Length: 216
Ligand code: GRF
Image 1: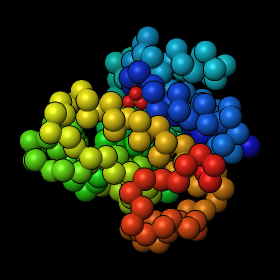
Image 2: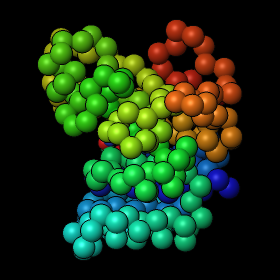
Image 3: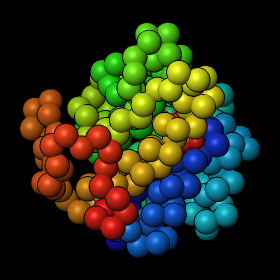
Image 4: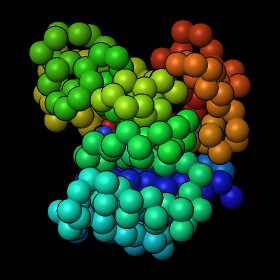
């Protein structure tokens, strides 16, 4: 079974979506290890509850970013990870780490990149007055949210939206999009051609959300 490593810092709702998709069989992959840099974070608890190795590697315990990342790398290798997913991981990863996972390091971001990269994406979208935002799963490169896009899902912005309501609706889409995108990697359907990702799956043009679970 294709092995996924998840790096997280927060509540871990995207991790939970991966765990559920894996358990239900809709995702032909299993989460082999969860690494979290925040002691006591929800992601660690969710991993433990699912019986997945949950490891806290706190950046504060290491003298340098290189040492912190080496500790992460060691655990990923120890668990035979083939694809790394950043699911709300709030540390910038260095160039050497990113290069070592070239084409095998995914991030989920709460906007339609390249719009609204970095932090506070919901606020950026509301402040910009756009009518549609969404979420993006992309390969990670050395920039901040600049890597090749794998999949996106659109979410309308309602006149009554606050950052909190928008965040909640975007997360619903993230929880569909991320397992679907990880499934493409598990099935070997992703080809990186230069800066662009080619998917060997039918994705109807004009479609704004990913296909439903039945076709994952
Ligand atoms: C997600 O909204 C993701 O887009 C962003 O961090 C958040 C993580 O949420 N990168 P969770 O911990 O998976 O609930």
